[in-house]
Length: 145
Image (cartoon, rainbow, N blue to C red):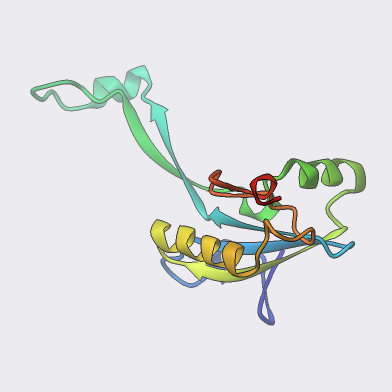
């Protein structure tokens, strides 16, 4: 369950149409937070089975051996990728966290832009109030000391 303003989002139907993903904030009961981004759908390549390969029309050139499958992501159960958050979930469970959506995005570039905007404007790598210790794998908190 995510909070978005005063609205509670529990299913994919609660998002506006054409939503690609969102920027979120996960906060521990201690007050320490994590800012991240999450897509709503995963695109995966799946290998075609024998029956599917035989059912393909005969064309010139190389035959397709895979197909694209779109699947809903794990956004409902996702709290963040930081190892400290994962350890806390194992030890204390998920009830010690609150999650909120900061921004809903409609394409990949927008998603990356708004995540970086929040990370830089909140100064997450300069503060001990956040679990984030790098931005884009490029800017690290250890380099600022």
